[in-house]
Length: 331
Picture 1 (cartoon, rainbow, N blue to C red):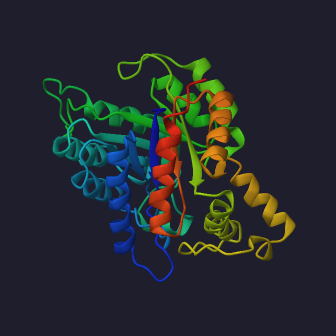
Picture 2: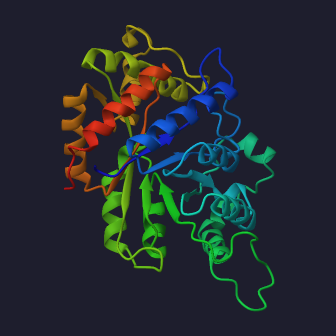
């Protein structure tokens, strides 16, 4: 099985609550656990009524408690919002509770708007210190030294793999410099994917965590029994991205029959550009598209988001995708 993972935005649907979204995410995580998916990540977003994973470490604990083998992690924690010590303590606690199952992906974006960032009590200049904060965080997971004045308890001497996340060349270069695995956000910002992977591999320096580069692409995939059904389900994601470019971020909407009625040509082009790494169709169609993508990018792993309104259709999509993964091969 080609290494395949789940990126879940924990979407809150129209006329539903965050509690409903969290319950559905647990069911998806349990399915992914049984199907052999490698990891299940949730991401930090704030002040977004359509996403229920703001308290990311709490959600990770909930999902880890309800699953058995699959790695559960953050894709990611927006480190400028937090003290590195606090994150080390949170993820040290998670690792202590669920040994060898916790991942910690790190991003330097705020994961929200400027007004909400201020409400988080974050300094807008904090992102400038991101590389230093990552190294400080790494230090809290190292073996505790004699006389060490500040420790993460739990945290010290625990194996919590760090990942660098990014949608630009900055994250690729930092991941290479620190010898960390790298995940690129091509599910919403695909423009720099190829260049970022190239720089990451060229500049990579081995570390105690990782001896050679490991690149994961975040993509969107919707698989259904027919191409027509998959394209219909995909309109929920298209509506969400249309709302983003109109600065109207709401709950996940049900699919519609004719997406062309919703946008003008410029908006359509913008949405299609943002979703150029979305692979939609029946099993044969998606398998061909994914294999071409793997061959082009030489990705070591794919992590997949599926913004599908129907829970049963979302579960079925990941079931079909697990079967496709058995047929995919590394470039």
